[in-house]
Image 1 (cartoon, rainbow, N blue to C red):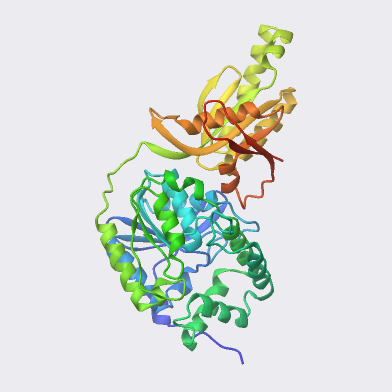
Image 2 (image 1 turned 90 degrees about the vertical axis):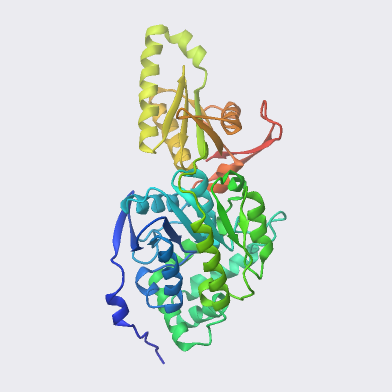
Length: 456
């Protein structure tokens, strides 16, 4: 027999207004609740729908606490709820773009990010990349890696992911499947017929079957282990009681992170359990009230890109000074055009090479590919190296070991080749880029060997 969700229309009338922020070509739905400082951006795990969110009193009580601390910004990530749908798995940096777009649209200069489970990696990446926009970070049940490995044994195995994705493909949207998911994610409330009805409709409105597949695939491919140490903003970690080791793994790698243990509960939602909700919200209020919004850092996570013309000395000798200068001007124009197109920032130009920075590794790789391809018309081959790491910012310039690593990786590349570090590979998961293993290499001036990959 079909079930119908009884909607409280008085709640709908009081629902905060829906707004849209433009993130590239994608419209991202968001709401603003409350007022005052600081701003709190609530980034939900996988699913999200702004409309049906307000039909669940248990979840609304959590939003009320957030709004009591300042001004709450809540969004439907691209591909979910009222935001534009997407056809492909999205790289983590696109989620960062969406958060930034919502903050800009709401005139939010800095905000506390409150994130859960599979969105915690996005939160950590945002905080490391934009410390000037993030005054604090809250991570509930943080996941540093989506798939289990010998050095990260708390994630699902490849086989478990295959079973999960097969189930999503076969059952997403069907009542039997979503009620089973409700028992897994909120066992405390799963015997409540009203809660299960809400959960089924909330998930249906959050994600279409195709969108659910892309969201779970993005969670599976997540890996932010290498960037945790670059998070410099105040951080609060809530380990999940049934698997606290994963939370402590993250907290130990973020300098100065606070850890608050929650009372035992079985699901993945703090708001679905009274004890967990009360403990998490009290700790959140204390954490937010103690933040210094004026705190600044001179270190940021950045993607660095280096290019170099292959055989430039021979070219210059063969062409002569005048022709070489003309070719070099055309080369510079082509490189700068692609840097601008992919939001790269030119930091230095030395002879026939460029040093540029990006706020996302996938954009840097796409820019490198476009640069390489556009220079073929000029009969120029370039080598490119890309790395992501923590950099020191001084007079709008970037310095540090990460910069040296990026430059050294570029020297390993052959004609027309784009080489990236393992950190880049981990962070572009979900972007559709194909990378081939080029093994470990010892880089001049760098102690440990670095694993590099070639962009296909």
